[in-house]
Image (cartoon, rainbow, N blue to C red; front, top):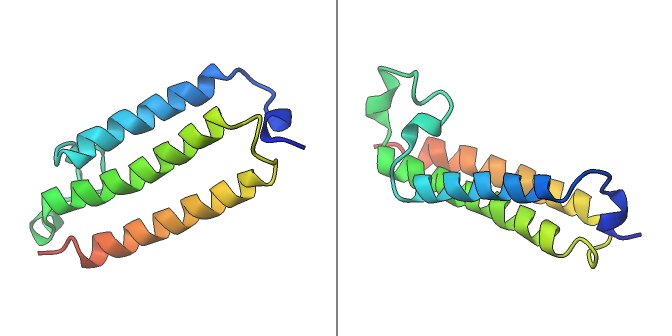
Length: 109
């Protein structure tokens, strides 16, 4: 069973998700777009504790990993086996955990 056999919707949804993640990645990797980071925009006193550029770049790298994963799944859906969904989910969970750890260690001033 291939990954394409599991897809019941339109393929353009995958490409829209990829474009959204890619644009957010580019904005965050450029060091801008801190307003996209949940919790950071509303924090007033805690903003001084974090380096905004490092925080944006860390989030941008994490978002780009997810964007590349969505791109791979969109391009190779006729080749990849169906269990790749579980592999992708594992990669996303590990990516999110690494982002949280790096935000709380590397990105502090």
